[in-house]
Amino acid sequence: MRTISVNWFSTVLLLAFSVYTAPAVAQIKTDTLRLLFAGDVMGHAPQIASAQLIKDKKYDYEPCFRYVQPIVSSADLAIANLELTLPGKPPYTGYPMFRSPDALAEALKNTGFDVLVTANNHSNDARGAGVISTVRALDRLKLSHTGTFADARERDTQYPLILSKNGFRLALLNYTYGTNGVPTDSPTIVNLIDKTSIAADLEKAKSLRPHYIIAFMHWGLEYQLNENAEQRDVAAFLARNGADLIIGSHPHVVQPVRQEQTFTPESPDKNVVVVYSLGNYISNQLKPHTDGGIMFEVELLKKEGADKAETGKNGIIPVWRYIHKDSTGKTTYFAVPIVRAEANPELIPDMAPAARTAMLQFAADLRKRIGYNEIRR
Image 1 (cartoon, rainbow, N blue to C red):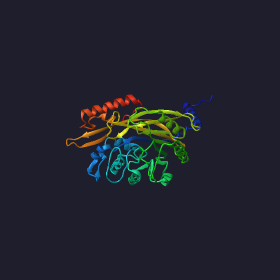
Image 2 (cartoon, rainbow, N blue to C red):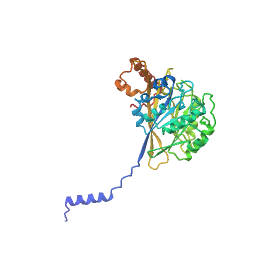
Image 3 (cartoon, one colour):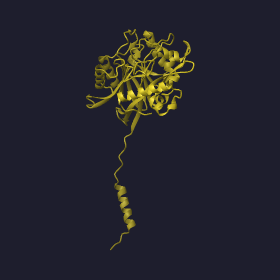
Image 4 (cartoon, helix red, strand yellow):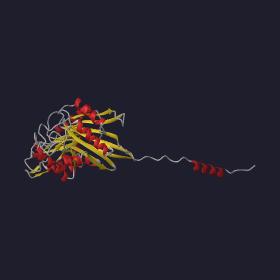
């Protein structure tokens, strides 16, 4: 009888398994893009006075965003609502006609914001000349923008706004319910909420083949803590017609964030996140619940070769407006990321105890009302 050594037999088995091992399954690469949205950037008269270095000539808004800068600049794309005009010259005024120095937009850019939406009820506060000077100021700063236009040609060629970043191609649309009764001077254009024109714009957006479509809406009723039926109706319309994410502003208070389900021929069970109102980012408003807002952060996920991106992890980052007064009486307005201030009381070492109590109360009320996933950073 022939004897086979164990070592030789083991070698044969090893070779056999090596030959017939099933090939590894290729992993599909998924790219991620992180977006950040901020609410109403206001320009009340006390804010203008606070930023003033030389009257009518030199203003500095950089300190206002010192504490949120690390969060904003870490996003792949950061977008905010500019609820004021940039006339480019004095007089600079607050409510009811918001006209701020260009230095405010410059500070937003230096903070890390990439895009400002400009269609809101204060778009016409400096009339047609103000619409033009605002978009031109943002052009000079190389800040992308949408919602208002110098003329029809600019709207035709620049709308919807297409944003390309890290292999993602996004379409951004922006509309307002009105302009406080101030007419839009020809040839300027302010995008108004009108379903016929919005449907056409969404069709145009889809024809440009973006991976994701975002609608930033200026809507709702001021100071109401919940969205109304009209907001829900418009949100459903936007989702049915192609919007993948809907962001809201105008009420100056935070309203709910909801996952709304809709039905389209392409996606019969499509879920769309709707942020009904981000609230105030920075302002001088003193009414209840207006002393802060949220940033909304969302990750977009795109599989290699896919035509569409998906909504990934998302959540809110609470922000509180802090007005600091020094020993000389000079004030400074700050947008404060609440989680960081809670975790590190020395983040703002000279914050008055009463101010800290007010911030914590705002945070407690917000968390109780909204109850949405909070990003703790």
